[in-house]
Length: 211
Ligand code: HEM
Image (cartoon, rainbow, N blue to C red; front, side):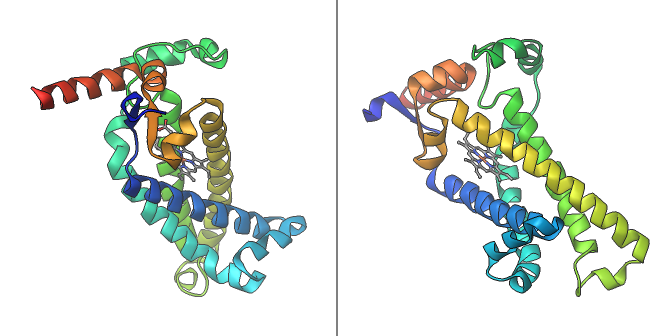
């Protein structure tokens, strides 16, 4: 691929930030499923031993949260909902049939949904995680609050796992997207096809800077 046919979508620090979040998510999700179902107990070995998994799982969760917060402040303004998104949602049938609709900016409504769900679920996971974190914080809370915390933590975890499965599926489904987060670039034709308004805005910025 010639350099002039490509556009930078993510810089190296952005990609490192994303993959740290993704790596922590994998470790936390796998070890968490290991605690949850007796038949999945063997998954706890992802963090060494079951005892280590019990100690490390909350710390991995906190690192995932901290890493995602950096992503949140990087991208929140690209994920605000606008009227093009309503048009996109009304034409969801076409999207499923692999057609592009509307003047999509840097992210489409599906990606925005993943973004806002991720921050909401991660906040719920952090708050409930602190409440149930033995031996450090849990003793400060009454038993009914800990029970509620455990339920909330489990529901939020299942929710985040489902949301990230959708995220991974979409990243693989739209050809050329994985390169964006692995190598940092996309082709101009990818940008024009999937994110036409983002492409136009980038070109306008480039033209202004060369004037
Ligand atoms: C584990 C496997 C994962 C894969 C293969 C993956 C893949 C990708 C790819 C290819 C992109 C670029 C999409 C684009 O620019 O159009 C992306 C963006 C992004 N990813 Fe992931 N990702 C993974 C996990 C995660 C996790 C665990 C989170 C958060 C908890 C996350 C949050 C994001 C966010 C926030 C963006 C930017 C999109 C936006 O702001 O709407 N990803 N990911």
